[in-house]
Length: 288
Image (cartoon, rainbow, N blue to C red):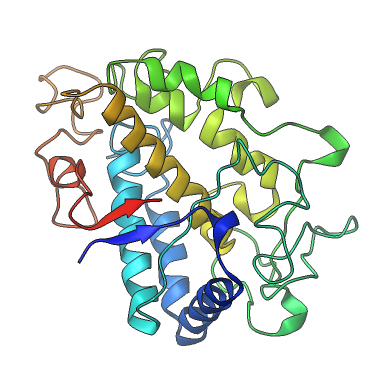
C-alpha cells in the first residue's frame, strides 16, 4: 500500500510525537547508530580512491533514496503510522521555524560549545548520546544560520537552475560537474567558502554542528532534509519526462572515472539494487 510523506510543518501534534518516539526507540535499540556508520563508510570524496556511491557522483540521489527507505522501514516497524517528513527549507527558513521546535528537533546549539539543549534530542534528556562520529563529542551540536559567519538557506529561485537542467548528470561525474541536475542539486560549486556551498550542501552548512561531514546522520534533521532532496528529484522527473539516470552504461576503459561511479544498471553498494530500480518510487510512497 502506497503511503504518504508530508511536509514537516503540516504534521499534527500526535504525528510529531509518534515520529520522535520512533526515532528515540531506534536509538535505544542501537539501530540508529548503524545508519550513522553506513553514511560515514560511504562518504567517499573525489580526492580518495575507489567507488563513490553516496556523494560527489551520479548515484547521490538513488543512494540516499534507498538509505531513506531503510530508515523509514525501520521506523515503521516501531510504529506503522510513521513516515519520514520533508523539510522545505525554501519556506521554513529561520532557526525558530519548524522543524526547530521543542516538540520536534529542538533548536540551535548554545554559543559556548554548540550543544543542543532543547527538544527530545538534547543530551541532557539522556536519550540521544552520540556514539558514532568523527569526534568524541557525545552531545548533538548545531549552529543554525552560523550567526558568527552567517549564510542563508537556498531559495526557490536558487533551485530553478537545477530543476531546469534537462540532463541528469554529465562528465566528469563528480564534484566538478558544471552541467547536469545531480550536481546542481547536490551543490558542489567552484571556489572555497560559502559561495561554493549550494543547494543541498548549503543546507548542511546552515544547520552546522554534526550536519557538517560524514557523521551528519547523527542529527535527525538529516532525514527531513534528504526527504526534500528526494522530492526535488521527483519534481525534476515530472518536469523532464523521459529523462533518465546517467551514465547509462559503465564508463569506457581509460576514463579516469571508470570504476568510481555507478552506471544505471550496476549494483549500488551496500545494497543489491541498481539506480534504475530506484528511479520510480510511486509504488512505495508519494509526497503530499
